[in-house]
Length: 158
Image: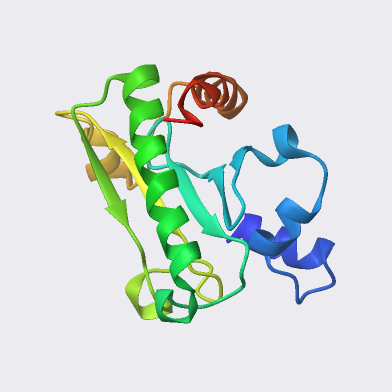
């Protein structure tokens, strides 16, 4: 919530971080890993696990139903590329993919639909998650950005 409030303050209260971030020419600072024609890939600023990506359409829409077929297709293709890049960088045991449509479903930014790609490892929910209700991420986000970004260009055409 601190991140969302800060973003709203910077944009005058009505901005959408998923519209504002790609409009800026600061991909590394904004953790934008890859830009497609209809959607982009950004690291989650508050990741559940190392490598937690989000695939976000440029179109500002609250649900998948409002997106056209080319956008929906690119979201899935970028998701697939993200899975491949994350496997190469982190070798996770599994993944969670998810789209939270609406605030009641847990969407932190309910007005702009996006898909989460979360790498998972056996035993990655430890006592910190259970007892303290927090996650410990052992890698700095800038390091995650560099590692995933470096893996991504190898996949662009395949």
